[in-house]
Image (tube, rainbow, N blue to C red):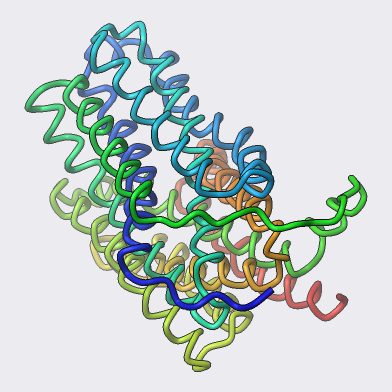
Length: 387
């Protein structure tokens, strides 16, 4: 199979928009469910279920839709997922009944499980291996913008028109991106592949070439979630105003967004090796989590900068490493399973920190995650050497 030429910007922009859509949909609604319906604030259990439905659907379905993308082509799965996301959002926008929130949120999560790994696979299929770093860096940048803008823009929309307006905007956004992708993204036919046994799948997913970047991506997502969720608590404990802690979280997201394109370009130019960059990213991220143990505004800001830069370094390098080590005909399956690893990190990081904080203090929770993150460097290095 010949190496693809670099995809023009008009082809890549809809994929970047798809990444923005899933990130904006995840955080825009999650951050504003309670504010949009005051009844939810009095039912913490139901609110927790609503928050878990989106991520739960992604954990279960991303590997499934990733494999489907390999069988039928990534473009149909991308378009179907975006249309499904628009439909699920439109249901609540039309019905406007809080009792339908669970169905809308579950539908959004299932749809995102389809178009997110499909978009990741298309980023690799439409670009040569020598440009994967830049492509994934740009994709990660716009996804980070979605994570950053989601809570803020979602809050403005809920303030202006309630949850119905937010769901209406999400439905329109997904529909526009679907139409854009249908026009701009070319059909990428599935590649012929040999029959894969269960044992062969297990061997591929336990190989160091898969485990190392996925473990690093999970650790990065865990640290990012902890930073976004717990740094405001550290700021409040230090009697910092909400504006200061909110600005610190914005700095974290901004550093993650800006670092990703730089890391991708450095990888493509040969100035940075994927293994070296991932190891450096883990060390920087671990130091950032440890810095959160420091008191006052200085500790919060240093933690935000280091976590943002570290995770921004790991993300494009991890996905580029996965793409380079995966047969093109299995890209959807690999990206779907890798996204599963990230979702587990997204849930596991805050759970680890919160459980230790409940038994001791938040400082000890940060310490535990920092140790785990830093220790991944020698553990993954040993696994690579034993490969």
